[in-house]
Image 1 (cartoon, rainbow, N blue to C red):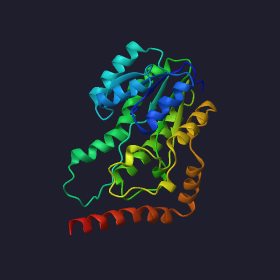
Image 2 (spheres, rainbow, N blue to C red):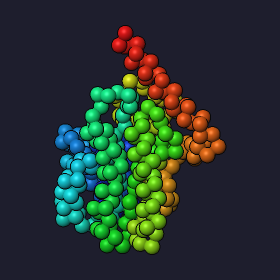
Image 3 (spheres, rainbow, N blue to C red):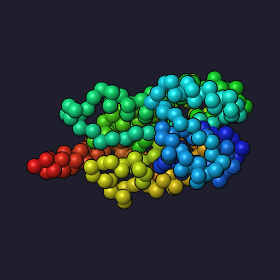
Image 4 (cartoon, rainbow, N blue to C red):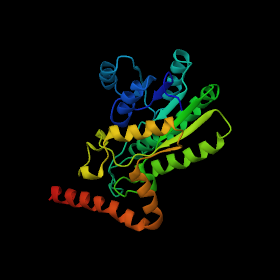
Length: 262
């Protein structure tokens, strides 16, 4: 995939993987458009990267997606790459009855429904381009349900399944479909966690994005570092081991919460 002079729309482009994509794709000579929910974060990103075009938009809102499409297709008809990166990951105890259905649905809408709806909205436009691409960001957790983040686990497994189906349906079109599969990455996604992950098990965000961009340039359908390849193998030969490793984190969180309440 040629990145220089491409016009790329990145959802959730103000922090973490999205912000690093802005940096590295700018270095590749791409024209960058980003979305974000918060105006102040968009302004900060614009200050760092003056050539970036910003749109305040929430992928969890159908109305926002429709409005975003109207604005982007009018202002940037040359758009040819969509990166569905916006994400929300929370540690949730499903026996916490204070969680509302709206609260649960917000995480699903951000991670899964938003991705599907963004593709559905922008696909007719992308099909008109000579070369185009869709990049959906899933997670290593798609291969190993993480009991401490059950909604996120389900959503990312859904993103992976949807991306595979989308790739097959678009196989004879000009739109290439990529899945970016990060392992644990050092971003602000974990800022509110009760227990912080072991930094030794986390990948630097710049290295993850570098892997993704190199894969895009080589037309690799799955943009994944070596750690994900290990997780894929382990999920086939020792699935229970992976599940139990992740479940230990939930036990630690519950124990910490219990001690705090005493």
